[in-house]
Structures are given as C-alpha cells and as structure tokens.
Length: 600
Image 1: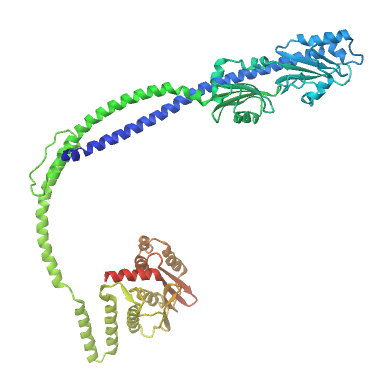
Image 2: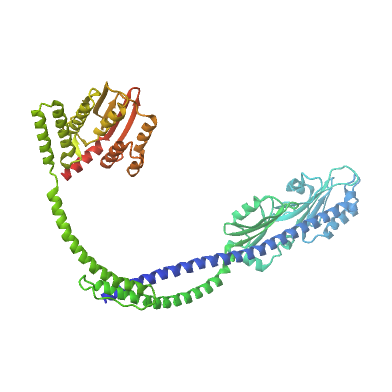
C-alpha cells in the first residue's frame, strides 16, 4: 500500500491541477456569462423604462399645453373681460360666470375660484371662498414674476380649506383693452389629473417606482413597489438626485445610483419632473434561470471531466510508475537491470535514456576509480615539491650574511627590508594584523623604495592609536604608498614627502596617506570617490583596462568584503599633492575582529 501511494503521487498532482484548471475555467466562464447576460438584461429593462419615462414626460407636456390653452380661453371669455372693467358685471352675469368655470375643457378639476381686479370672487356656490381667503392662502406668490403665464404648483390646500396637498393651476387674468390690475384664477386638480401622466399601471408598480416631483423637490405623486416599504414613499436619495438635475427633456437616461437605475424627464413649462426607478431586484431576477441552466451544465461537465481525468491519469502514470520502481530499486550495484517501455510517447525516450545512463554510470565508476589512484599520486608529489616558507627566510638570511661578509651595506639593508616585508605580508595566513605590523610592513616597503630611488622622498608616520592592540585588514597602506611613489612623484627627482596618519574620531578609524607630488586628476578623483556608491560586485568593472586603479579596486573590494558598506576609501586633490583616506567604522571593525578570533 505504501509503494502504491508513492507511485500515485503524480496522478494525484495531475488530478489536483486538472481540478484547479477546470474550476478556474468554470469560474471565469460563469463570471463572463453572468456579466454578459446581466448587461443585456439590464439594458433591455432600462430601455423599457427610459421609453416609459419619456412617454410620461410627453404626456406631461401635452397636459400643460392643454391647461395653458384652457386658461387662455377663460381669459378671452366675454364675462371675464367685462369683470375687469370699471363697471364690472351685473349680479346675473356674476352667477353665470361662477358656473362657467365648472364647464371648461379641462378634466379632473376638483375646485376653482376666480377673483377679478376689484376683489370679487367667482367660485362654486358651496365653496364660500372670499377675497381674504385668497390673500391668506399666499397663492399669489406662485404667479409673481410672470406677466400672464399658466403656472403649476404643488401646495397645501389653504384656499378651499381641505388642508391636503394638491396640484393647482393658476394664472393672472388681464384686460385686453385697458391697463388695469389683473385678476387671478386658480384650479385645484384631482389626483386623477396626475394619474393620466403615470398611467397608474399595476404591472409597473410591481416592478419600478414612478412618480412626479416639483422644482422644490416635493413628491407630487408616486407609485412604488414593496421594496420601498410604504407604497407611496420614495427613498430620499432618489428625490435629492432628481432635484439636482438641470435641463429639459430626458435629463437622466438609466443612471446607476444606489439601489437601482434612475430615469428622469423634466418639463420646464410646468416645472415638474417625472421619473422611473428600477430596483436591483428587477435587474437581477432575470439571472436566476441563467444560473439554473449554468449550474446544470457545470455539474455535467464536472462529472465527465472527473471520469476522463481519472482514466487518462492512470494511463499516463503507469509507465512513470514503472520507471520510478526501477530507479528506487537500483542500489548502485546491478547495472544490467534495464526497462522496456512501448507507449509511443516521450516516456519511451526516457526509458532508453535511463538504460543508457546505467551504462554510462558503470563506465564512469571505472574511470573515477582510475582517476582517484592518479590523484593520490599527484597530491603526494605536490606535497613533496612544496617550498617551505622557512626555506625562503633561511635563503634570505644566507644572502644577508654573504652581503655582510662582503660589507655591502646597501644590499644588506635591502635584503633585511625585503625579509621583513615578506614575513609581515604572509602573516601566517591571517588577513587581519595589528596596526603596528601594518606600519612595519609599509616601512619595509618604503625603505626598499628609498634604496631604489635615492633622495626621491622621505616619510613620516603619525600614529595616534594603540598600534599594538588595534587591528586592521593587512596590506591596505602599501598600495597607497606605491601609488604615491609611482604617480605622485613621477614629475620630481627629489624632495618628495609621504605622511601616514592613523587616528580615531567619533567611533571611526581613519588611515590616510598624503604626498606632496603631482595632484590626482579631478576626473580620476571623482571616479574613485564614486566607487563607494557601487555594489562590491561592480567594482572590478570600474577600470576594465587593468592598467590603472587596480590597487584602489583591490583595497576597496577587500574593505567592503571585510567590514561591509560602512568602510569607504576616497581621495582628495590638494594644492600640492594628494591625500588618500580609508575610513573604517569601529563597530564594523570590532565585529570583524570577533569573527577573526573565532576562526583562530
């Protein structure tokens, strides 16, 4: 059972990846189908209600036009014009005029009144509306600002005493012949008047909220589905959005807002806006049949995919199982146990390669055994032929004694300095030395250079630290002295001076080498100083010709590898000469000393 589980690992992984791929494909396809179907259904429903809103808006405009024509006919009526004259109307004509307004060509008039310019009121006999009632109602303010124009306004019925909100139609009545004060007429409209605009369709009420709003944001009429709670209420955010629209005609065409889609038609003549709001419930209900169909299809696809995946995974992994068993049972001894596969796939090539590999391993083992025998012989010969450093020191001592016998003082000094230089350079294989040893090393080098270049330069060492107990990376001063001699003193033959200073300031060790020779070129100084900003792997590319800057690259690379990015090296051209400075943070130096002590 254990071997079977190991052998079925590829099959399980294949089935897992297949399931993941199938799941991703189904998820993406469902998202795509949902988005596409939702977009199509939403557009269809929105178009339907945009058309309905536009139709309601046109009906609104027609009703206003009809009311404007009707009020114009009233103004032109003979008794109305006569009532505006100074003589006024006789009592019989007054009664006739009161009844006239009951028969005007305008449906759904709940009540009316007309007041002429002399304060006479004409209304239904049972209305009992007086001139004071008209003044107290404040309805005159709705007519102000226009000479003689039909005005619609939604207001509380303080004129006829019902105290209910209703739609009123009002207009100034002016004389056609004389310049007198105008009269006023007001018509209170029944709810059926506005219902002619919305159509009052039960089907629409089940799907969307439709209504009418005036310029002040007052809801004049509404029919809302159950989603909004009360049947005649509309959420405040819908009313606020409608109140902000400007323009005429279809000012909002299927705008997406919180909870659904809003369409608005505004009529500037009446000052009213009709709207339709389709909630998300209506937009989403068409997706349910789509999800049912998709779910059924996906279940069938998943079932077929699982069956086929199991079948093909077993077929493909069986030869892999054979290869795995051959490899796991191979113990490195029997190279004759090969495998034979006949799948007409790349697995056949893997089998042949495995058989070929067994033959190659067998040959390689024989070759390695032979090479190991030769390697042991070569290593023994190398150990025998190695030069012992003590042999080099003893040879230099012998040469020194011969020079001393022959009284060759210069040769003696040079051999003594070279011997000391080599001893300090080797440092028993350590890369960290004391400042004292580093100074001895550079002294030996400068003595050799003074012998080679007599009277070329003198030197001074100013060490302000405990040289015997302060450790630094070895061979970092000698290359700086070498550059001073090679480049700084290239234009002089005598009088050169090298000053080496070592000091500690604010937790940083400073090692500087100054010379009074030819100052370093500005371009070279800038290039060297900018090397501190480069990664250590890019330092070797700063001087690709290998003719210049090798020592500087070597110093900075070793400093960075040993002490990290805190260690820096920079040059400063002065009026007479150049100063090169190495900065090593105390913290980085102490960590390096600790690691070096552990290695020791």
